[in-house]
Length: 185
Image 1 (spheres, rainbow, N blue to C red):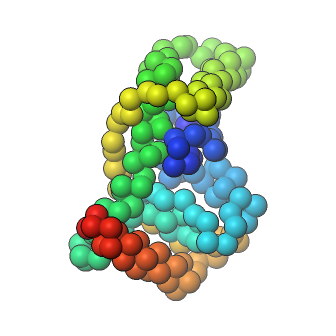
Image 2: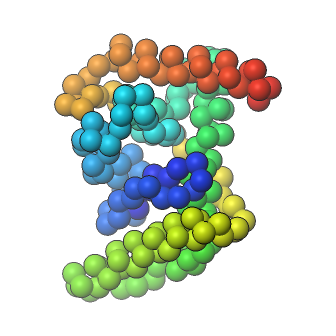
């Protein structure tokens, strides 16, 4: 399952049905947000991701080594991780609310049982959002970071390294400047 959430830990998009052996970045490539970003993102809107995800105008991953070793890139990664923690907390709260999602031990013998399992997961996500909207106050859990290799493509899967790198550099400068003024870094 791939989850995209907002800062309030409400699930705004998800993809279910891939086997657990699939990497998160691979599951993301199955999502409409990856395949047709122009339908889901206005100019300047983007997702924050760990370094396993591909770099694009709508997905900004952390820098990975050796670039992550540069002081400004390391500071940017730190700020990005502080923002990404909302997603990890969202998943932690979801699993805390619905313990069945932690480890689903159901045998899938046919398509109907598979569909039922997917419907269960989607139902838990809908109920999670309802509780989040109503102000349910659950403890936030789980903090995690991941690594991987970024790719750079536009909506037509054409590699456009200078444009997307410039976009991330601009975002990095703004993030670092703001976090330095606030005393975060």
